[in-house]
Image 1 (tube, rainbow over the protein chains, first blue to last red):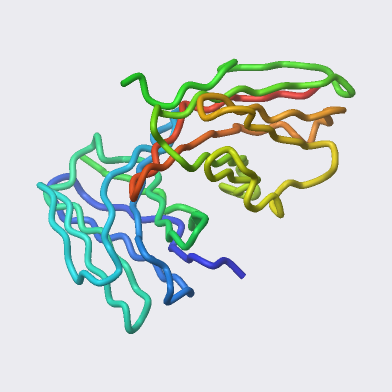
Image 2: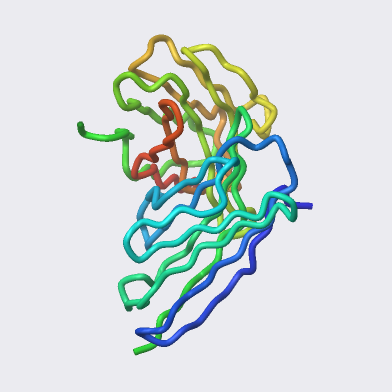
Length: 108
Length: 111
């Protein structure tokens, strides 16, 4: 199976919070990442967290890491239609392993 | 900084032809990755380099695929001969310390 797992779809209303979840399998991963991909574009690095941290906040984005459960989440506050995209979770060992991506749809 | 640069942005070729994709990583970045993205298989890691040395090429699908990094500022991914199932978007990415940045990708169509 996948090393990094994500749900494939999430739909929210504009102004609500979005929470995208991810599980990974390698406890030795050093950094965990969130990327955003808009249609026809490359992957844009949103934020990342070191494995010894529990939380990182960056403007509307909050990353939570539960290392015991190997669970990572990305919360987007006040979700806007421009946030509609595919969001990828990734873990770094020496290489980088990506999940399949979560397609976020924001409805007006 | 211009970011990771890839060329060409689009490539259409016929089955059996040789295809060469090019990447210029961000200056000073010591890791370089090649990925392939398709609807069916998602984002696949093909190969990565550290300080111009290939570290892991286990993701390269077949011997038809080869990658080189002759210096710190240039890498190529070659497919010879190309097949329709190679059609995908190919991304190059580079890392320094903890941040990985992607290029815009090359959309390859093999007819």
